[in-house]
Length: 420
Image 1 (cartoon, rainbow, N blue to C red):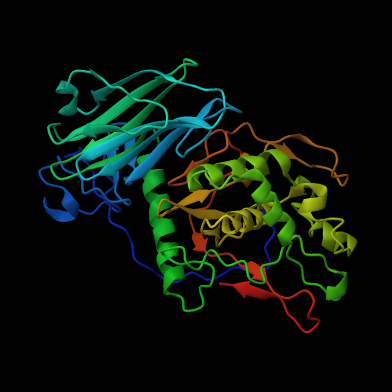
Image 2 (image 1 turned 90 degrees about the vertical axis):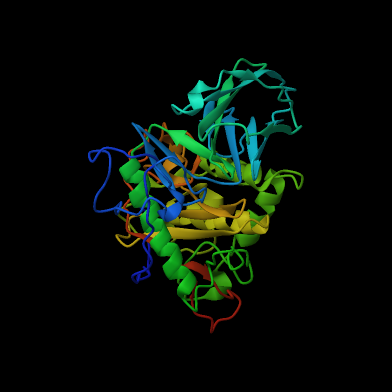
């Protein structure tokens, strides 16, 4: 899905090792992907401890435990009443400091939501011996939870808001640390394969000397110098209009400086999915500007409010970078899709806006729109092989970074440059 002019080759890179939480049965393991390791390897001791790293993925029956991070948010999207693994319109954020967990409820809706009740309970067998404990969680105020006396295992905090909506946030405790994480009934195999492919692409991109669009710490994914959009090979640069500044200005309109990077990233993503339609019309054609041989801006995503995955991902990269949030683009060697990596709280996560576009434009007349996706907007610390409730299948052969195009439209001798 999407139209690309160049695809970057991917070299062999490091492969991440993943180990299960407990002594799972042979049927639960994936022999080719989960090598047999010594009991002390990777922080697993006696099948009870998990080394709390961001790359660990654990299978717990039909559930998958993943995304061990120092800070994690579960939030409600008021538009769809769906919960997201990122700070959304309102919800709860957990922050870890060794054996301490800080729970904080937040509200961006302006409706003065309050916390009606909160409780702590164990999820895993060892942890479930803990009786439910009531907590006092307040809006915009951190509640300290000392986990040093808790047994090793998975715990959840259930928070009920004054609008009767509830959110479960999870954290794992071992003997030396506690860490927020995600606990979902999703495919362990999909999570593993996706993370493995993404890790390989990240390592490859980081090793490249000319990887101007990607770096492990995000430092190379902030530059807006000479970044222009939309992308086009133009014969007469003086007739070509650059909309980059328009998207920068739009990002400034959408967010407030006081917001967290998580919420800024969510708001910009949600605006794009609601305001830019997916352009079904050009799926088997050249871009509208090419078809019309008109690069004046008449057929740009800014003007028509429609585009393909290339448009969504480049616009989102511009918006995030304008707000100081590292962002780059990723795609697959099969050339059928491109999306984003955005750095939140020091961790690269995937954001696929195209998948969650609300409308599509199926006709040459771009004003004709119809509903496109029933899926909820979202970020993911991994991406499924198949997105839930979506028509789109994402290939696992991930490439970082698709070309973010930049150059000088005023220079007639300027060619189209690429950030690799």
